[in-house]
Length: 396
Image (tube, one colour):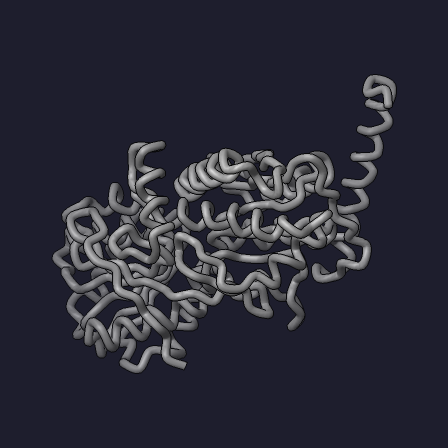
């Protein structure tokens, strides 16, 4: 077909489809997939990359991109997927939920990718997942933890998956580790009330914690001065501070708390897992800080994980963090699911059946709600670096 002659028609069709998609997103339930035809797998496996490469949480997206790139290069160097190379199509969602939604639509309809990796945050993933459902292109978030990302109205979303654990699981891990491992019988709960991610973790912690919460306080994304709240509970009788939130605020809070003489253990979720947390808190202030992680270089989960660390360091000159590792695993998960798939719908069905997958973040099996069954780690920091990592198996 003559490309020049059909260009105008093709653009018109894309615009019409985008408009129709926008209408259906606003007027149908997110889990309606009857009209989702997906995209055919051609001579390459096309993976869309929808990451926060700029904006407020670019630290997550930029390291995830490194993990994606490394995995892709490895797979292609080893012959690809059944002889088919992986082709990446990357979009920067600018750490904006609306941009994340638009990027998913563009990747699925214009670029006709067979699967999408990202976004990294729960809010952006929720926005993007609507269009993944409509187009029949599976979305695999490496790090989106909000509980309801993969379900709607009690029904599993056919085209939405995650490579990490849920918020409620993190809340349970924090509760168990604080009480059992740190012997923290009385805690202060200080969380980001503007974030569904942080609120979900806080709620799960409150339900699971066996000790006493002596004070509860909240902050909001973008806040810079936390001294008023810190002053209120500085002299209370407590054993630890549990702080669900992202590094952008929790790093600053940690510095201000330490500057005020608060030396109690600080526990947080995987939102602490970025070098920017250390920069904001100050390396010396990270002593006695613990956070949930799905990965750590301080514990050997497998030979594959050891090789990943070595190869990542050789390529980028730095140690990989959890987000790089989860993104790396996401590529391999999609590659595994693509082995016996002719289109994106079959690829999604294969992802749902993934069992005993050996990733660098550990072995995982996808459950009925498209969540991975895997072990969590609690990482302890010292002088701005990971010091130890302890596996936590949540009691049922």
